[in-house]
Length: 390
Ligand SMILES: Cc1cc2nc3c(=O)[nH]c(=O)nc-3n(C[C@H](O)[C@H](O)[C@H](O)COP(=O)(O)OP(=O)(O)OC[C@H]3O[C@@H](n4cnc5c(N)ncnc54)[C@H](O)[C@@H]3O)c2cc1C
Image 1 (cartoon, rainbow, N blue to C red):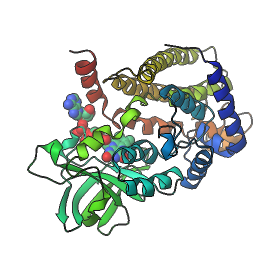
Image 2: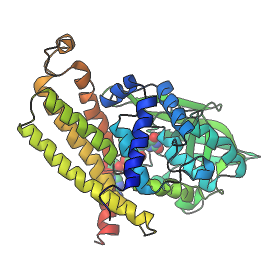
Image 3: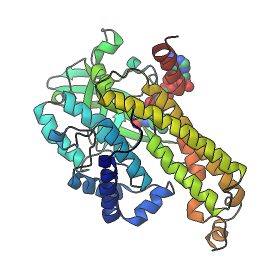
Image 4: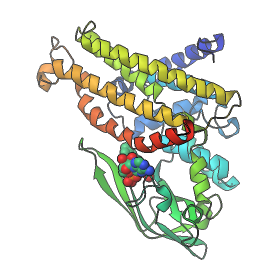
């Protein structure tokens, strides 16, 4: 596996960096650097700039407006975007339902949805989990019965991130109650404005509205909104992530956070402290994680088979974010958090207020990484059984 950059890699980095310098608003960069949220209008504006350059969907085939890049090139692009504190594009559209529509959609579905996603004119949420179905997703009970040309949908989805902002939900529903549980599921694309949908907020322990519960009460959905064949929704859901399951390492995000750790250590004059040695240990773990990720990506790009190994990336990447949050919290705790907001505004304050304000919130928010996208215990089971053969 190649570790050093090629001439093409260096040129690519220069091109991307120049683009960011020209088009990305420094105020947005500052917010992203400090882990502050950016509003949807800012995110959509950035997505459209990327779309105009042909870079909004690095993972889509060229014929649908993607780049056709190799996985390694995508990894490099992602690292550069996070290094320069560019906002992320909407993952549910670009990384989940978009690739599923490309693979399973009818010509009409592709022509309708893909340009809307590409130009940030439609936003999605993911309706998989239910109160009784999480890790064991195939137990889902939200029911869709055929009524003429429609499905009538009843049930509820839970932990639905961003449902309050989304125009559409892609949902797994049960269309056959008699079949083996994986075989009776279909995949529907449902407008959130449909009559009978109700969205109730769920709050995380940092006080933010992170999720929702979405209730379906006799919601009529045209059968033409089904993606893939009836009762084949499990197959769509399994392949939904497609190559995306290789991009779960959070290496780019970890690098961005590590840069923040280093900046804070510098600002507080702690570069020779025990906290700095913790940062060095994190960097070693991160280098090992990136090496493993690049090994798998290179294997994939070379036509090799990648099995369950990405579970290792998911587990390590999510843990590392949390270790970094803890370190940020320790640094800020010593030098920033004891000060009130006004004191932190003064030029002599060891840490400026905008550099510490989001640290506690991120520490809480990132706890969810242990569960989202497949809980750590489940990842460990997969690694034990399918990677180590235990
Ligand atoms: C930040 C965040 C965002 C999310 N966003 C969405 C979203 O947008 N859409 C959506 O559909 N869902 C979303 N989810 C839900 C997520 O997919 C589920 O929480 C996850 O699948 C786990 O399901 P559960 O909560 O029902 O827990 P359970 O599956 O009930 O698990 C409970 C505990 O038991 C453990 N466990 C379960 N099975 C096993 C096993 N076989 N062996 C050992 N231990 C086991 C788990 O690791 C966990 O610790 C989100 C979750 C989080 C945290």
